[in-house]
Image: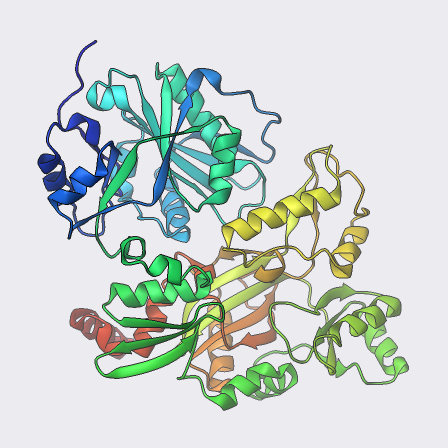
Length: 565
């Protein structure tokens, strides 16, 4: 059996895999890691004696808190069911590189130079697989494989899995498992005997998947160079910040990247303090001290918000208060055919019912809404899609269509079981922020599709299980920033100016994001910036708070653009 190549390294685009077992001297391995480029994430893998390697450069290196798992490729059990709604294949088109990077960014992973990805699509060392939605052609997930024999003549015939990433908005179940199985079959067909991977010790859903597929822990370690990308892993802040939700974390990560001091005030509540150059501001996620108490109170009362934006020329739906007599409500319902009931105050979609067509349904929805706020509003229902526009400093930063959650039947599982699985996937994808409530509104939506909790949904049938599209009730978010109609942008900015709020999520109902028809729904004073990757929401938020943290060259360029525009 021949010896492997010495000092083997593989460039994966996001960084290099440094195969520690091919280095005879720990000092050479440490010096190799110190060659890491900017905005890269190099990994020394298969480190047997991490204490020896760390001793070479203790100020620069750290032991990655991840586990190494190995799969004997001859022992992979067959899949219990075939994937539905998507297929797995190699990267096939240059445009797909952008989709892969979009998914990487949504998972806080380092993106790859698209040219690198495209050039290496048929590389014998690197394998890039994607999961494609069969209905839309959208890329739903991706995984990368490394063939160790091709890389450095590995006598053990090994391979490894890297960068398994699923679009947080993907609806079909089983995408991760399908990608892992496809890569396993590819490496087995290429003559590999094993496939290894590195997974963060606290990534319980991923570990559960790997162990279910037959992966077993092996005593190998990973060592990385300290940099801004992985700062939380070696400063100890990861444990302190584990209660932070994604909406606070995305801002804190951007602030630290710029050298802004961060102090966590209350992790569970999302409160933190930022300090830079003598300026200090407190925030709760995207709500900062720059938002006035008056603007906050306007957003808190939906009827006040509606009156102000209507006066600014923004189109609003007709509305009445649920306190009106029953005849008035019945007449309102008869004129519009379908209505929305919602509490005058509230957030995260709680207490909202959409598409009500009978007085019985309206009365029941009013009772539910009153649990959130005594004053309840009834609005004409505008058929279309839910559009969220994030406006920061009175400029559009991101626009996204928010779609209600749906399940895809497999011919075996009940509606309840499918919804529970969807909730687990949405919670895992959003840090626990998104799941479908098992309440009367979900039951009513299911009944509208002809199903009850215990009914089995036929294989391949898609059923919407919630009519509202809020992320917190299981909705998904799809970026449309590049195609949104200018009139919608103008209306969103007009609404933000009417409220006089520097950071706001403006919600419209639209027929199509590319068309100008819309009605205003509400304004959110604390929009979730983490929901809009790859748009630079956190960057623009920190720009607003600390304009001097923007590089001088960028500030000059933006000023020139504003003057010329």
